[in-house]
Image 1 (cartoon, one colour):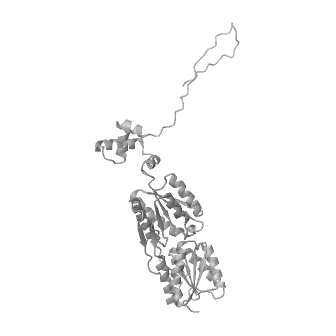
Image 2 (cartoon, helix red, strand yellow):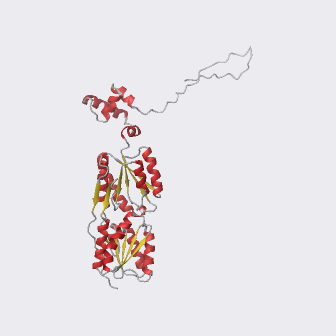
Image 3 (cartoon, rainbow, N blue to C red):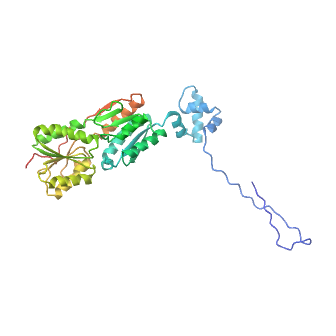
Length: 371
């Protein structure tokens, strides 16, 4: 709308006053509305078809001729239009896989390398079906349970992946109540109601026990993450089965799973009477922290103390001395988890996958018992 204003002469007024002159003021163009996002209706109108035909053409469904499909795709590209992700989710589902990591009790943040290897391998498999990975860190299983409920109500995920399984895990119970498709990873024990990807941690830690027996160690300590973790119990049981028949002493220190907690546990073990001659750690970072404690305590590795890590990384290879470890199975575990997710989406809700941990990588941190 153009508004015309009148300018009045500032001279005398009244009957004898000359008539005031008026002139239109320069007009300004009306502000333009911001460009509207194109819709499916715009595409259909420009292509001369119905909105249903546009939907069929964009989704590759039958019933649309090749010429019409090509015309619709060309018009959609010219308009820069794509189907709404939210609308598509309402029709076909979210096309995403959820992964909620607990960085509180499980020590996830202290095992960032393992998590990254797992996530990369998982995402590579999901990408073959154009599935997104919805990842979030929470503080504690209760927060994870609350988030599961929100995401499931909002249709945010197709399948939920649960890692760092607890002995009594409220997350699994919550997902079972929601009847949400789930893949449980590394539980160490099969839950026949849910899909599962397991790792032979029991056999792997039994292998460590047999190796230490061959070196002559009869006083061994195991430093792990929290005892509420299922894998902690599996590892402890495996070492116990191997060492008990040989009349060995096995001491278990459950910690928060962080390098700082492992360092504190190592200090307690080395300063107490009857210190162990070999210590097995749950992760690479825990073992590296132990080397520093031993050095500061005047304990020589491997002559006074042998050190073994439950997972491998560059840290173990670059440490001085380099650390004897079990090979990391995180990449294989991520791939197997992705394959299990795809199987669940295809209808196999109780699919089983198992990953095998390779042989022990013997390095400079272990040696025969000398005292």
